[in-house]
Length: 130
View 1: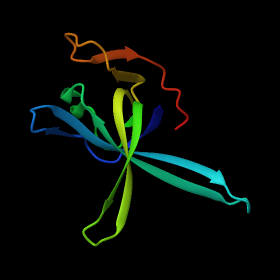
View 2: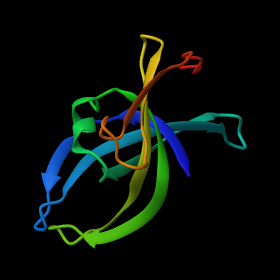
View 3: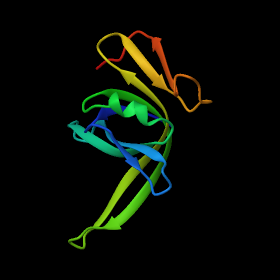
């Protein structure tokens, strides 16, 4: 599955009890549609994302960055401290494309480790409509 959105906060690197590093970040995806009355309805979906392949990508994942992510979605449910039921979406990321105004994108792929630690920069046209 692919999603495109903007980071809502800077990425954080965390270390598990097994000394594995994971990059955690959040992405917002905006969507809109017209209801039966013809009114435009704006809807935002938030994904909590995890990337396990290389912690070095965290320096590139800053608030507001436009990203295209490839991975899989899972759901989680919990009860808040106030006793309210909550739910969220997790995105287990295997590929990250960063888009910016410099007409350049960098890709982080789930590939065989190389000297570049999973980073594959390449030139691309920034033809996104936003």
